[in-house]
Length: 365
Ligand code: TRP
Image (cartoon, rainbow, N blue to C red; front, side, top):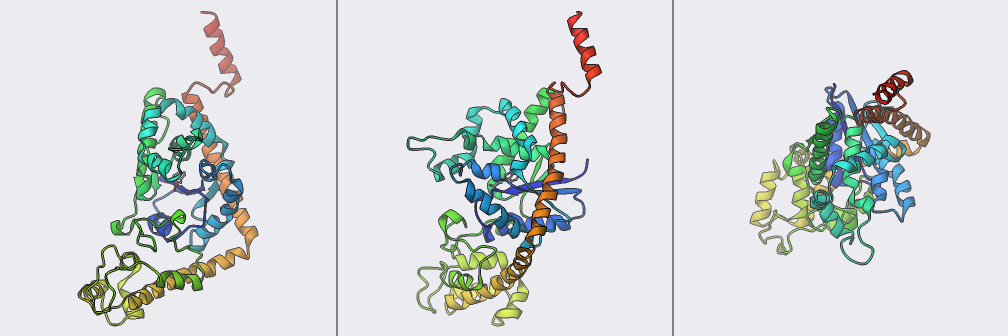
């Protein structure tokens, strides 16, 4: 079997630079990697609904936003298949059967579920934990195995999901015979670049923390955001020594700055090490650092903006891309589901004559 990659996003908001660094960038490399036979990118609206069940319109609205995010950064529909989860019935059906091979304590131990429960307040109050949310790692295992994916390019935070999926595959195959493909996680290569801090210096860029730069960020607000970024609170006077650790501006520079940027925008230094050295010693002001970062980000995001504008003026093409991608995904996942049903002895209508023979043998015993 060939190399098949599957990954996805919950369409709960526009994608931001944290997504870009943590996974989208990796997908761009993937689509240029000729060794992959199939690459699927899924808009996981069903999963998005597990903690937004009372706000379906939000999910619906973000389908087009995220699709435009994908296209504007250069994901190419000729090389990757973009599809919508809720339109793939096989995935829900697989989930139903996988539930038999997962225990409640195992789900309770899933670190991502644990953390998200706290984040969403599902661990307290009267309302309790929605079953749909609790079991979403099982449905994510259905997403992955439904496509026969052997490679899953995701960010660090999805590790527990992959582990859970691999356990399901292992258990399923050991009961029903080799049926499901064992997936491998594919983390972003550049380790320091896997996590982008928030504008406020918080550990993670996240919509709920309101500390994001969006892929569709307009030039005006990009400038405002960069100029108000968290740096080193003790670096008050230019001549004070400054800290680059914990400093959001330098975290961003670590991720986005390349050597040619110094030649393009800041000739005072040859490279980032030199710049950091000066900052540490004192004598380099935050405004200068921020302006440099702004030039780098504006160069990148302005390209996204131009491309997004183009797609926005061709929404009929965007519709057709999603429609065709989803159709392809339906036949892919239906084929897996047929295989699974056979393995589980539920292929009752696959061949009338052979089923009748089987019944006869059984009843005449
Ligand atoms: N859980 C992923 C996220 O929140 C989204 C997702 C859903 C996904 N299904 C997937 C990722 C399958 C990889 C593979 O980002």
